[in-house]
Image 1 (cartoon, helix red, strand yellow):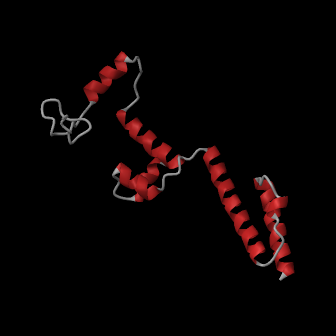
Image 2 (tube, rainbow, N blue to C red):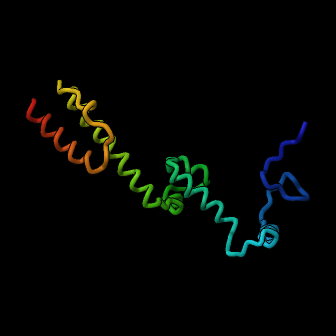
Image 3 (tube, rainbow, N blue to C red):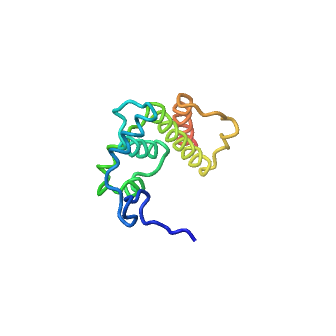
Length: 139
């Protein structure tokens, strides 16, 4: 049976202690791979935090995974791309459209879903306005 060590990167001579610095090993690995600095080990941590946020991991969980004492420190890692921002707005618009459709249908309105396929940001804004107007005239 293989011994389980308490640390992912244990100290070489004392496996029950954590490795506290990797500077020399890191520099050697960069030279061997012909990677020019300023690539830092910290960049991997930052990449993990940023990619986790973009993937949709909630900030409270990300805060815990990264060991941050507060959300404001976690926010340093959140750098959404323009595409991610656009997808987030589209997600909100789809949610709002579904809410309006559900409200209209609960008031006895005809099912408008079957006539509206492929919601786009531009058409959903118009559609939400039209459905809201229809809902207010039918009550």
